[in-house]
Length: 317
Image (cartoon, rainbow, N blue to C red; front, side):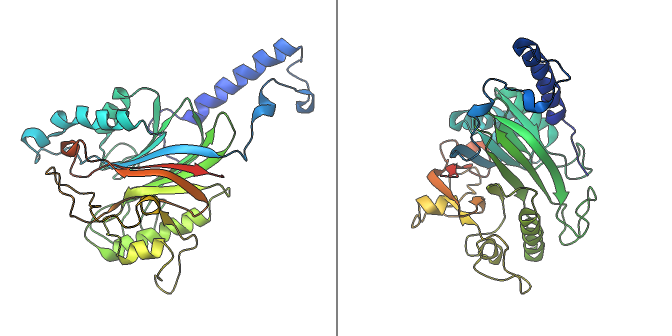
C-alpha cells in the first residue's frame, strides 16, 4: 500500500524522462520506434553505480506543534530557527520526527530544492505526526517509497498493537543522478512509554530492512526513545537477542564511530541547553559505510527540545 499525499515524484520523473528521450531520439536521428539496443544517448555511459557516494544526513525531532507550548517554545516562534539549523548543515537527506503537516510544509517552503515523502501516522494521509524524509531533488531521484505501521498489521493505516501511540516508519530508495548509485533511508520515531513497543517496532523494522528489494546500502534515522545501553539499541547493533532472534543486519552508530569516548552526548536539551541526558536520536547504518564526520548540533538549543544529529557518510568506498 503506497501513500503519496504529496505529488508523486516518480510520476513526475517518468514524464520528464519520456520527454527527454523523445528529444534525444530526434537529436540523434533515431525514430521513436527504434529498438532500445540502437540507442546511444550521450552521458549514459558516465553512470557508475559502483562509485563511492558521499551523503550528508540529518535526523531532527522538531517537537510537535502544540498549544501547550507557550512563549518562545511555540512553533511560530521556533520555525525560523528550525529552518536555519537545517539550512546551515544543508543535508542531502533529512529525517524529521513529530512533524505535523503544516510544520512539514513550512520547512519545505523555507528551504530550497527539497522534496518530501511521508504520511501522517493517524490516517496514512495528512492527520497526525509524520516521520517523513526530505531529500535534495536535484541530486536524487526517488526510486520507491512507502510507510508502514509498527504494529501487528503494518499495512493498515493508523494501526497500533504494542503501545499507547501509533508509530510508523517511512522509507525511500534514492538514486544519485550523477552516478546511478542507490541507497535506502528509513526514518522512525519509536514509542516513548513502552519498552515492548520499542522492541517489537525495532524487530519489525529490521525484518523489513532485511527484505528490501535491492541489496543497496541503507541508513536508519530517528528518535528511538531509548539510550545507548538499552536493550533495543543493543539489538539493533547485533549485541543482544529479542525473543531469541538476533538482528538480521547489525547496525553501527555513526556518531560513535567518530566519537567513541564522548561523554556529553545527550540529544534532549529540553530547550535549556542540557547535555547530560541520554542520547536517544540516532543515525544508524550498516557496517559497509565510512563516516567522515558526525555531530550533535547544539548551537540553536531553543529550536526544539531535541538536538539535531548529523553524519557525513560514504557508501561503497
